[in-house]
Every structure is written in structure tokens, then in C-alpha cells.
Length: 301
Image (cartoon, rainbow, N blue to C red; front, side, top):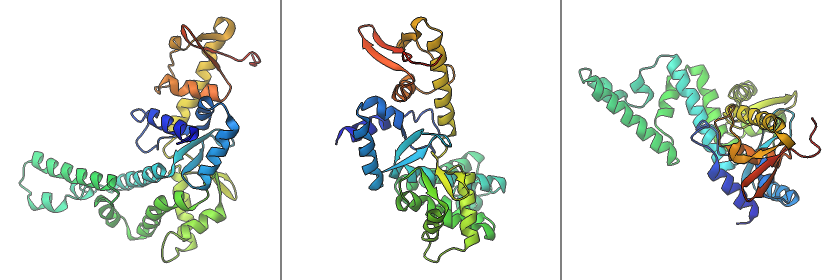
């Protein structure tokens, strides 16, 4: 394991899963990697090599921005599959399907109409747990086929295509923040043994945009974005502004890191400090009393 792998592994372990939604894969901001590895040329080359091997996927954090996050390809696939399952559950709720059928417990619950409500809930919960366990183990949970069968017939081809796409697109498309419409269309067509129609492919692309997996860049391309990464992006931007604001109010534009408390983000302080240091917004210096943060001398007041 080289320095690049070590830095990525360290940031993945430190990713605040307890704060960010479970549908967001553990990501490392490129700025955070810059804060850890001072030689940016070596880091950029290491990331590019991992992109070519499709071990990592880069994501745009803001449209038309140099903000980039990276995540392991396998983690991205897991997040996208979970995101689609959440979307299927939402559709099932909107159609007011019986809870037992949504969680694969149709036969047990319906065969005992006089069973106590507590027993029914226990059986439904057990079925849901088995579904989750199957998903974690790499198999397909029984809830997915049940939800698929509950959808209107006209929607099932789209869901089938999306289920394949969520698993295959991160592994078959170039690991770049931007993807052309032509490449995306070809990748979607190759997801199924029988190539889908043009209208179905366009519906799938539209759904990926609605799920915020893609952001329209222009008429011919899209940006990949972090799945369910809206909360993460909002917290990062607010924290950057707040850190700069607090430092500007201090004499000499400096303060100890342990004195810094953020009100605009619930993410760990160290997560944001690595970000602003790697973006050269803030400088840090290790001293006897701890970590000193300060604005650069050429900071634009």
C-alpha cells in the first residue's frame, strides 16, 4: 500500500457515516487528500492511475467547479443499488401497498388474519431483516422482485434497466467526472441482453437525473455527482464560509483549532479543516499548544 492508498483508506475510515445518509458512499474530497499528501503531483498521478483501473470514481461536488470527491467503485455500486431500492419503496408507499407485501411477508401475515398485531409486525420485521441480509451478502433481496411486480406494467422495463445500470455503469464507463450523452446511451444499451429502445434509454437517463446521480452539464454531457450527496455538499460549503468568517474576526486572522466551533455543520471539525487546508483557504501550523489555524498572508480581505 503506497501513500495514496494509505491516505484514501484513512479518510474512508474517518468518513462520518453516522451523520451522512447511508445512501452516500464514503468519499474523500480531493482537497482533503491534498492536505495529507503535500506532493500534489504524485497524488494526482496516483488518482489518475486508479481512475484508469476503475478502482476509484471521481464526482463533481459543485456544477462548473473544481471541487472533486473520490469514492471506491464498489462503494458507489452499493450506494446506487440502495438508492434505487429506496426509490422502489417510495413508489410502493405511494401506491399504498400492504406493508407485509412490501417486505416479503405476504403469505405469513395474510394466512393468519386473526394473529395479534404484535406477531404480524414481528413476522414483517423478520422478513425485512432477511431482505437486508441478502443485500449485504451480495444477493438480491426478495423485496426487490415483489416491489417490481407491484409496479404498473409500463414502469417495469424502466426499473429493470435501472437495476442493471446501477450495478454496471460505475464499472463500465470511464472514471471521469463528466460523461457524454453518447457514451452514457451506449452504456445503458449494453446493460440488457436485448438492447432497450431509444425512448426507454432516455427515460432511464431522466430518472438518473431526478435521483441526482447525474447533473446536466450541457446539451451533450452530464456530471456524475455523489449519490445523495446534497447534505454533504451543503455542510462543506457552509463550513468553509464559517471558518473564514471566524478567522477574519480574530486578531492577526488566527486561532487555535480547539477554540473553533462550527454551528453550520454537524460533521467533525477535522473533516472541514482538512478541506480548507487542502484548498489553500487556511494554513495550519503545529505548535506546542496545539494546531494553529490562520488565513494566508495574501488573503483577500
